[in-house]
Each structure stands twice: as C-alpha cells, then as structure tokens.
Image (tube, rainbow, N blue to C red; front, side, top):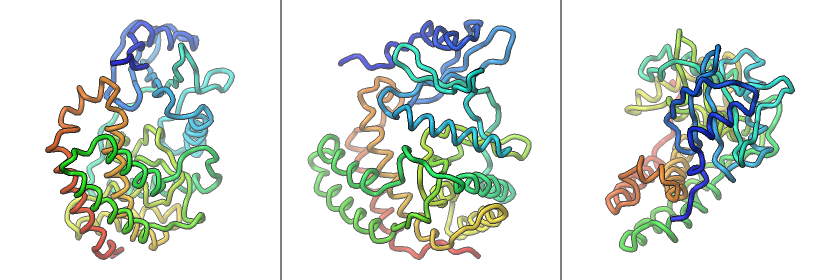
Length: 325
C-alpha cells in the first residue's frame, strides 16, 4: 500500500507545526476523534491548550478554506457562539507546514444537546436562525452546494464501479436509480432558497453548556436551503419529529423567516446524506485510519443492510411531509 499523506504526521511534526506559528508547546499532545481531518489538542507553555486542525490534503482549495474561516469569524463577530479559528497578529487563520494546511482553535468544553428536550430544540432553532440571518447577508463563491449530481448521481456511479458486491449490483443499481428520480422530482430549490449554512449540523458538532449551543466544525459549510441545518435534529416517531420541528422553527423565526415549502425537502436531503456517507467511507478507504475505525464497512453484510436502509428511505420519500402543528 502506498504511503498516505497523514503517515508523515508524527507527534514531532504536529508540535513543530504549531510552534511554527510562534507558540511554544509544552509537548503535551492528545489526538482527538476526527477522521476526515487530523485534529489534536496541543499543550502550550504558560497558556491554555489549543486545538490544531490539519486539513486533509487535496480536499479543499485554499480559497474554500478561507471562506470557511471568514464565515466562522463573521458569525463570531455577530456574537454567535461558534468556535472560530484563531488569527495571528496579521489576521492570518490558515497556516502551512510541510505541505499541510493548518488552523488553530481555542479549546471549548461541552456535551451534545438533548434532542428530546423541547427547550433545547427552541434554543437550537434560535441559534440557527441567527446563523442563517448572517448567512443571508452574503454568499459563498468557492464552497460546495448541496447538490444531487455530486452527492447522489456521482456517488452512485462510483460505488457501483468500485465497491458494491457483484451479486448486489442489480438491486443497488435499480434502487438508487429510483431514488435519484424521486429526489430530483422533490428537491428543486431555487437560488433564493439557498444561503450559507453550517452544512453538517448534527449533535456531534454542537457543544452544549449553560443552555448555550456552541457550534463547532464548519468544515462542511455549504450553500444550501435552511432545512439542511435543521433536519438532522429531528428523531423518533412522526409525532415526536413534528413536535421537535415546531420548537425548532418557533425559535428560528425569532431571527429568520422560514419558508414552509422546505418541509418537503427533509427526506430528499436525508437520502443525499445516506448515499454520500457510504461513498465518503469508500473514497477514504485508502486512509489506514478508516479500516481501523470502521471495521464493519465494505462487507457484504454492510452493503445488504445499506440497501435495506435505502429501501426504507424510498418509502419515506413517498410519505406526506412533516407538518408544523
């Protein structure tokens, strides 16, 4: 197996990279749970530890990362609790060292929000309303859009060509063709429906503390409808999801208008994420960290269960959209 770029990222290199930004490390190093990038807590002499993020080589362009950072800082300037990158005395937030693009962040503590607590949903809605109000003030030039071709059509072809077991190819091909048609018919946002969003809004990217939702990791910030940042908080039976949705939107609309047309996009967006997640694991399979962490992936059982999950998703696409009660 050829060397992966992250194989060069030794503890000494991590410390040297941080110190190249003008900080002195006390050599305490803790690898954090991240696979797409590499993220470390690094101790600093006479100071608080900081978080060093080493971006996956060749994933984002410099312009795309700089837009992520600018959006984070814009949200921070609006007094929204996001963990934004630290700037040096020249205002630089993106550093390079030995071919790696690096950003430093302050350390923040917290725990995931309780999604069965409707008060928490109200607070999440308020925070997202504020985030999207800032998002609407400008637009991305370089970041990706939530896009059917990229996330479903292209990923479908990639998996069929490289990963789906031969005996499951007919089922997967037919099913994903039907999903592609259904999603294309249902998910048709206009340009005015799309704004700058967090893009990967799940509980793992929120630190909850003192009834404040601290949003982290804007690595997947995108151009997308507001619903992209809302639907992942909905869970449980239909009536439970509708109650959660009502609290989210009540809080959201204190700061930003919500177009109820977007309710019909919950299941299409979920479909895009399901296919994209499987393809993400497949495209990263040459990174040794992935086979170690995702031992269940790329087995015949995994693909059979994935097809079953997609069949259930096809049924969900036929259901009536959630309602605002």
